[in-house]
Length: 128
Image (cartoon, rainbow, N blue to C red; front, side):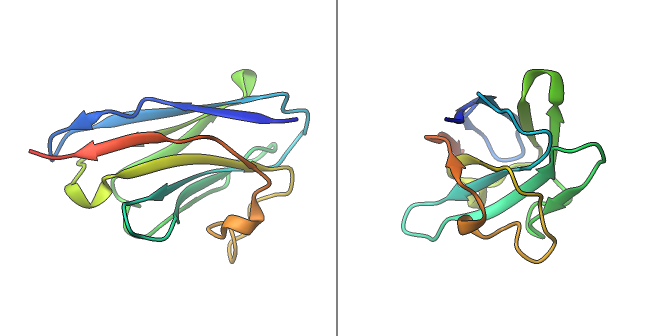
């Protein structure tokens, strides 16, 4: 069973930066899709970014974060990262890591049902 563990959440001031990590244990697949979702209080969970874990570089971003967030991965560690810059209060949310053995798809990477495995989340709070 694949398990995902996120870390790196914290409280920061507007304009600040954070880097989140997600380690996938028991990840036996040669390729797949790993993603970050977030859920703010009282709102639906939304896709933030996704990355293909196969042998070519393919990344996807929510338009609201494209210029500020970067998703990356370290295949040797089965870990993905989310570098978040210029944070604002609208970025306040619980951030979840998700993964599936199927690849990322342009038209569906942001859909929760595309992912079989989920982490417990890490809280990001942006406030002055």
